[in-house]
Amino acid sequence: ATSARSSLTIGLIPADGIGREVIPAAKEAILAVQSELPPVKFIDLLAGWDTFTRTGTALPSETVQILKDECDCALFGSVSSPSRKVAGYSSPIVALRKELDLYANIRPVVSVSADTTAPPAVDLIVVRENTECLYVKEETLTQTERGKEARATRLITERASTRIGKIAFELAKARPRKLLHIIHKSNVLSVTDGLFRESVRAVPAASDGQFDQVDIQEQLVDSAVYRLFREPEIFDVMVAPNLYGDIISDAAAALVGSLGVIPSINAGDDFVMGEPVHGSAPDIAGKGIANPIASIRSAALMLRHLGYTSPADKIDEAVNETLAPAQVLTADLGGKSSTSQVTAHVMGLLQKKY
Ligand code: ATP
Ligand code: MG
Image (tube, rainbow, N blue to C red; front, top):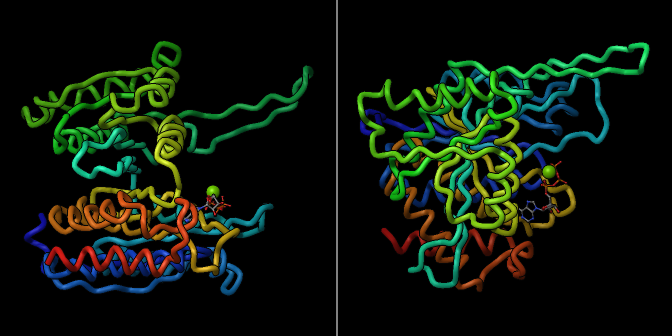
């Protein structure tokens, strides 16, 4: 699919807080590798809390339309959410995932050691289903004679489980270890988690042998979290329904230090959106000290997903060459450098690769 693209149009949605400080770094990284890409065009787009306070909508319809009609992919920064419920406001990122049917949330978690030639102690990818499970948000509250009773619907479909399974198998196949852990709790929730597990397991049989080399393992979610903390090196690719995936991906993030270094993509069949895992970090916003690494890595991950492996590798290498010697780091990693100093350092290393 890669070679067929005659141009690459990228929507930039910095949104709020430190998103505005770190998305420009991701843009710079893409510009630094553009000789290996088709002609790149960026389109600046609005969304977020600030947009809501100025225009009354957190996700202008123009933003959605341009993403759908003109963009191949996008980079999203972060949104501030009001601490209390505000009439008319809802999270633009949730809406975007829905509008663009970005059903997979993919989050690699990789540790960096001082010795860049040694394999990382933690090198895993969490693949989280992004559209259903308990997050369909169908909740009811009833008053009974014995007090209040709350219920929530958990939706698991064969279709959504199969398509997330397929993405997970594809990622596992492309990695050296080719290992996939299916995370579930089907010993207790045999119907819902049972369907998830079976749908994922059925993927290879329906895929003409293309996933034959992938080693399929299973892990109950509780013991998966335990093992993640005790022996994270056993995991390669983990695939999970929405709620477990949410918890596991944050738990895995804690293994490698700062939120400021963890990238993600939201992927669908026709679109991919890079997004640093961190939020808008109001405590440090506007100070020029936010770590740009999560966003730079999100740009690489997005390019990789689109099939541009070589430029993605180069960006990741430049990031690792910055992190390993630990000379130029932002405060969240114990350093003294600013966002622009770290960005300039990564770009300098990146330029040397061309
Ligand atoms: P939000 O509601 O937007 O998620 P938050 O207060 O939860 O905001 P996060 O962005 O989730 O803030 O960050 C949690 C903590 O991690 C904050 O103290 C923040 O400063 C820090 N942090 C997050 N991202 C970065 C980054 N890129 N660089 C440095 N510190 C960061
Ligand atoms: Mg947060």
